[in-house]
Image (cartoon, rainbow, N blue to C red):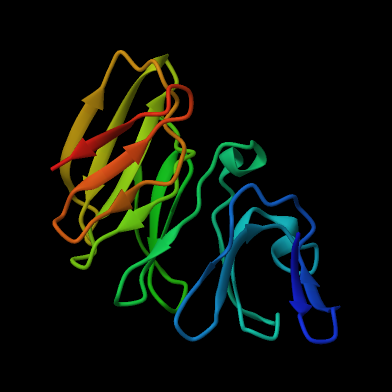
Length: 186
C-alpha cells in the first residue's frame, strides 16, 4: 500500500503494507514515515499505525484495532514539534515519538478531515456525528487530551473533509466540498 521510488533510476526501492491506504502518509524531520496499514508480517494483520524508517523497515508499530480503518473515512494524522503523533477515526489518539500511547479520547462521531496542530500542540479536527449527517463540530484538543473548545457547525449543507489550514495569526480555515466555501475560525 506504500511505495518508495528512486527518482534517478525510476525504480521501486521498497513497498510496505497489504491494505489500500485511504490517508496520505506523514513524514517527520528525520524521514520516518507514518502510515495506517495492515501487514501480515506484523501484528497478525491487525489495523495499526506503523512507523517506518526511510529505508522501509519497521521502527515500531502501534496496534489500535480500530474498525473505522476498514472504511474509507479516516484522515491524515499530524505531528507536533515535540514529535507526538496524532491520528483519528472515531477516536482521537496521541502517541509519543517512540510509539507509546499517551492518551485516546472518543469522538462520538467520525472524521475524514486531515488533522492539523499549531505550535502549542493544539490539535484541530472536524467531527461528523453518526446520528445526524447534517451536524459537525470543529474541536480543539490540547497536547494532554483536554478539550479546549468545540464549535458546532449546523445545519451542515457541505461536507467537511478537505484539508484545513492555520495562518500565522491563529486563524483556522476549514474548506468544504460542495459549495466551494470555507469557515474561518478566530
